[in-house]
Amino acid sequence: MVYADEFTSTELLACVASHLLKNGKTFFVGTGLPMIACMLAQRTHAPDSLIIFEAGGVGPKIPALPISVGDSRTFHKAVAATTMHDVMSAAQSGYIDYGFLGAAQMDCYGNINTTVIGDHDRPKVRLPGSGGANDIGSLCWNTIVLIRQDKRRFVEKLDFLTTPGYLSGKGSREINGLPVNSGPYRVITQLGVYGFHENSKRMKLLERYPGVTIEDIIENSSFEIIIPENHGISNPPTREEQRILHEIDPEGMVLGA
Amino acid sequence: MKVIDEGTGKLVGWYDPDEHRRWIAENKSRELKDKRMDPREAVTKYVKDGDFIASGGFGHIRVSMALIYEIIRQNIRNLGMAGKTAVHDSDILIGAGCVDRIEVAYTFGHELRGLSPASRRAVENGSCQVLGELSNAAYQWRFLAGAMGIPFIPSRVLMGTDTFRFSSAKIAEDPFSGKSVCLLPSCNPDVVFIHAHRCDKYGNTQIDGIAVEDIQLARCARRLIITTEEVIDENVIREKPWRTTIPFYHVDAVVEVPWGSHPCEMPYLYFFDENHIGEWLKVSKTEEGTKEYFDRYVYGVNDFQEYLELVGGDDNMKYLSEIERYERPMKAPWLRGD
Image (cartoon, rainbow over all chains, first blue to last red; front, side, top):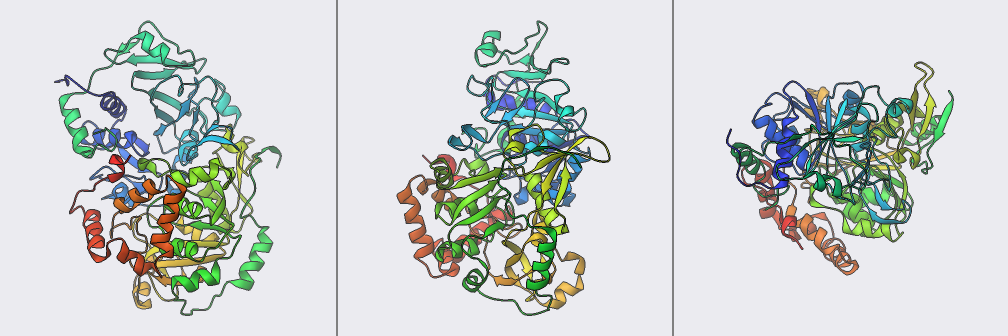
C-alpha cells in the first residue's frame, strides 16, 4: 500500500467514507461527496455493492460523476430504472443497509438541519429543506453523515431539526415510531470519524486523521464530543485511491480544482 | 384511530375523497379523442390564477420547461406549487413572480450547483410563502394517496422532527401494531405538467428511464398536460401496452415540443445545458438580472421555438445530445462563476 504524500481533507474524507462501503450491502446515495465515495468503492474494494438513488436508479454502473441524484448517469446500465415510490418503499421495508447524508448543522445525537438558518418563518438563510434526507434518516438501517466540522455546524441546538438522528438519546427514535434499531452509524468530517456511545447515543471519536490533534477536535465543536483514550488514527489515502478520485471528478466539481 | 400529534403546516391540494370522485366523474373525459394543442392553448385552457400546480420529473431532469416559460409569458399569478424536488422550474416561476407559495420537500437549491438566488431572495424577503415542510417520500406518498382516491396514507417518515411539526401530516396510533405512524394527507394538484419521451395524440404516454414520481403524479392530477418530444402513432403504443406509463384518460392536453425540457436534461436524448443554467444562476443574483433574463428569454420571444434558437439552436442541441451519449465530456461553468 503506497500512501499519498500530500492530500486534501476532501480526498481523505471521500476515501474514509468509501471504506465503509462493503460488498453485498445496499446504499442510498446523495449528490456530491457520497456519490464520489460510492464510485471509488465500486472501482476498488466493493464492485458488487448495490447503489440506489432516491429518484429510482437501482444498481447502475456509473460512468461519470452525476450532478443530480436523478440524472441519467444514476441509472446508466442499471439493473432497474424505477420510481421514488419503489425505492423509498424498499427503504421502509428494511432493504437499505446504509444511507448517506450531508448537513448544514448537526447536534451531538446526529440530528441534522438542512432547512433553515434562523427562524423558520423569517429565515436568515433558507436552505433547500429535507429532500430525501428525512426519509433516509428515518428508514435506512444505518446513516452516515458527511459534514465539514466547525463550531457553526456542530451546534448545541439545531435551528431546525430536519432529519432524525437519535433525537434526544437512546430509545427516543423508537418512542417516536421510527423503525427499531435504525439510526446514525458514522459521522465523517475533515478532522476524523465518529460513532455514537452505546448508552447515551452521544457522538464519540473513533479515529482522527493524521496531523489532527485532540484540541482540533474539541475546538471545532460547540457540543462536547466523547473522546476515548484508545481512539485510532486514520490511514491517509493511497496513491491509487487518489488517482481514481480525480478520474471520477476530472472537473473538480466536488474535490475542488 | 387515536391522533397523537398534528403538524402546523397548511393543508394544500387535499379534497374530501367523495368530492374528488365527483369532480373526476364530471370533468375528466374518458373519450378517445385527439388532444393535441400548442403550449399557448394548453396553458390558457388549463392553468388559472391561484391554482396549486406540480411539475413532473426530478430537479433538472425531464421537466416541462416549454410550459413553465409559457406560464411566465402569460403572466399567470398567485400560483401555489408542490416543491417535490422542484429546482429550476420552481426557481424561475418564483423568480418571475408567478408562484407565491410553496410546500417544500426540496426547493431553493440546484443540487451540486449551489443554492437558488432568485427563489431564496423571495422566501427570505417574504414575497414567497412556505406553506409547510415535507420530505421527498412524503410528497411521493401524498400523490400516491391522491392517485388511490383515499384521504391519507400511513408512513414511517417525518416523526420526531421539526419537518413534521411544520407539515400538514398527523401522527396517530396504528390500530394494528399499536405503534406511532405518520399519516400523510392525499394530494390532488389542480394542474400537473409532465414531459415525456413520446405519446400518441390521445395522451397514451411512454417515459424512458426512471419515472420518479410521475406514475402517481399523473394519476392524482385534476388537470394533466403532457409535453412530449414526439407524438407517435397509436399502433406503436398498442404493440407494447406494458410500456404505457400513463394511459390517455388521465391526460387533458398533448403538447408536442421537441427539446421541451431545455435547459434541463432529457434522459437518453440531451444533457443539462450547463451554460444556460450557469447564466441563470449568475444573473438571478440581482433583481435587475432576473428581469433581464425574462425580458430576453421569455417576453422577448414568441414561443419556445424562438427561445431554442436564442439559446444556440440546432448546434447547441446537437452538442447537448453528444454529452448525453458520452461522446463529449461535460463542463461545469458554474464552478468558475463568481
